[in-house]
Every structure is written in structure tokens, then in C-alpha cells.
Length: 545
Image (cartoon, rainbow, N blue to C red):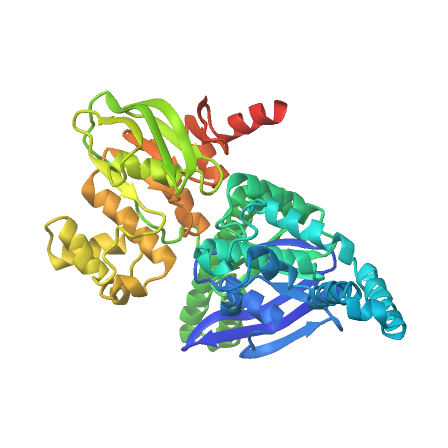
């Protein structure tokens, strides 16, 4: 059964063609991953499907009465004064209203006035019975269990479900939006970066939830592990066109490369044939100048050459412009960091109990754990911007720290990228332009205030900062969060080859597998464990327990 059909869809913003003659069918039960570079049109495609955007050309058809749930990035301002639980439970307005009605009727039935009036009491009983029947029919008695299960799965334990939405971070508010959407269980779920602010356990829970979801799911994500686990088809948006690949993300990468090689071979064959035809045409034209009888054959060959050029495949783009990263730096001493008895309590909550840690030059270490467990706090203690409650922090000889902040507060938002890079190292304006173009900044973006840049652009600027400071000990807090997959893969490759030392906080399992040799694991009880191997090694040992 076709739920949504897009036919010859084109959409233009400010004269820029974002989607070009796109065709798409979404079948009932599909699990589709949508990939593409930042700004390629992925979210635009979702808005078109949801009816929040109108195409410049083409048609969008939806099955009659189709329920579509679209995960929005922004929280509803009206939720600020509600608890997390109430904000989610009210995603089912009829059930929420019935729950309130049942509660009010219970209060009234228990009042002395109701008991004294037999007629009034009978009416209350009748109203309560009707409301109760409707509540039961809609699954109301399972509602609280479902809400609390979803919130717990997404990282809001019972103690935080009573917290006011207005006190949450932007990422946490998006998780509330996700919980509300999952509770509604629409026929078609459109999930735009649902995993961006989830910790590893919450990501695993979401994967399992989507795998068993009874409806249809389309998901935009930069998490390659998540795409491998839950999707059965990849839709790639590139140069305004949509291409379909069967299988998960890993299968897509292999098949895409295979297609490109076939396209290149076809292109080369066609170009050789066109050159052969053009040579024959030149010879016929030469003969036609000497003997008129060759003129019709020359004219026929000219048409054949024109037709061959028209029908020839476009040259495939085998190598696209990507960010260029070079993190070479002078080495430090053998011992890079020594922590002894370091602990931290925040707001009465123990983040981590006293623990020791030694890091040697060249080690690549990942830091994992639930949101709020103290991972970023540890990084800031190492940076000496936060003091530990106990213990000592000692840096080794010749250590040069380079910090990549998840919150990007290390960037001067009132400066332009041009001003910023020239403040990091003496260079001419031309040199600064050249440096910024290496991380894909356009001439216009180079002179735009940093506060107006996108999350991905700010991330690329932080990478430039690491390159220019020539740090040999990199402290990275969620470095791949705002990067598209191609940029994340280039950063991974450079970090994997980096001869210096890395300590990285990340929820990106592909990234942790690629670059890490050890993991620092933060647990809910405040304990910190150091485990050998990468994330897959850790997960295998954990699953075997």
C-alpha cells in the first residue's frame, strides 16, 4: 500500500534549486534512511511529505486519512510550565482530557453533597461509567505505563519526569518532542535527527523501538550505526536528485561505489564512441568538399554525433569537494596526563567518585556514559576550567591542549571566521581565506558573524581552530554531532592517523570504533571504569554478562 507519492517534485529557495524532479514512493511498513550532505534538502523532503512545505513544481499525494508524525527541532513554548510527564501525556489530548474528567468525577463522588443526593450521585456514576469505558477503549489504563516507559527509554528516569520543561536544555526539549511523537504512534513517522542528543543506551532503546514499530518510518540521521540497525532502504539526496539503494547504510556505501564505477565505465565508453564518430564526421566533411556525393552521408553522421552527445550519460562525480583536515603537531612527553583521586559532586549529586587515570602519548581514548553523568565535566577539569572536589590533575611535559566544545562556547560569536582565524595565528587575509576554504567556507560565509552560522559551519570552524593551534593533546566533546557523514568520515580518518593523544566524548559508535583503543565508562552510580578496546569490544563484553 502506497502511503505517500511524490511525482516530479522540484523546490527552489532564493533562486537555488534544492530538489530537482524528484520521484518518491513510501510504502506501508517501509524503514527508510535519508542521507546527504548538510543543506542537500533532507529536511525539505520531510516537510514536503508532512504538508508543511509546498513544492515549486510537481505533486504530493497522500493516502486518505494518513496520520503523519514529524519530529520538530523546536519545543512548544506552551510546554515551558509543564512537567516532562505532562508535556508528553498531553500528546494524546482525548485521553488526557478523559483522565482529568475521571479524576474530577472521583472527587465529586467523594463529596458529602453528592452522597446526600441520590439522583445527583446516580448521574455522576453514569458519567463516570461512560468516561471510563471510553478511556479503556482508547488504552488509557496503559497510558501511564507507556509514557513512563518511553521517557525512561529515552533517558528521563522517574526522578526527572517531574522536571519542568522550561528548565531543560535545547537537546532535552527535543527528546520530549520525540517521546510525545512516539506516544502518538502515527502511521508514518518522520524522524529528523532523533538521536542527536541521546546517549548510547537511549540510542539502543530507540533502535529496538523503531525495529518493532507497527507503522512506517523515515529517518534522517548522521549515526551510521543506527542506520545499519534499523533501515532497509537508503534514499540519498545529492545535487538535487534522489537515488534509492536497497539495504542498510553499510550496504549503501558499497553499492554506491559500485554504481559510480559502472557510471564511469559507461561514460568512458560513450566518450570514446563520440570521439570515433566525430573523427568519421571530419573525414566525411573532408570528402564532401572534394565530392558532393559524400555530403548526405556527412549530414547523416552529424545528426548521429549530435544524438550520441545528447544521449550520453553525464560524467559521474567520483571525488567531491570535502573538508581538508591536517592535525600535525609537535609531540609531547611520554606521560600526557595523570589523575589521582579525582571526584566531583554537582548540585548534591555525585557525578563520579574518586578514580585514577594515566594517559600516555599517542593513546586514543573514548569517554562514554549516560547524559549528565559527568563526561563533559571531566574534560573541563582536565582543561582546569572546573576544579575537582578531590584529587590532583597533572599534565605532562610539552603538552599543548586543543579543545573542541560540544556547546561551541569557545568560538567568539561576534567575530567573523576571517577575524577568528587571524587571531589564532598571524597570517595575511589571503592566507586566512585559503585556510577557511579548506573547511568549505564560501567567501560570503568567511565574513559572516559566527553567531549567524549553522551548527555544521561552527563545527568546521572548531576543527580549523584545532589545526591552527597545533595541539598534541586533543580534548573532543561530541566532535561529530553537527557534521554530515562525509565530513565525519574525513575527521575520523585524520584522527585515526593522528600521532598525538586524543580524549573524546562521543555517542557516535562508528566514530568510537574507528579511533579508540580504550574507553572511560561513566556509570549511574558514580563509578568510573577504564576498559580496553573500542566500543564494539566493550558492547560485546557487556552483552555477555
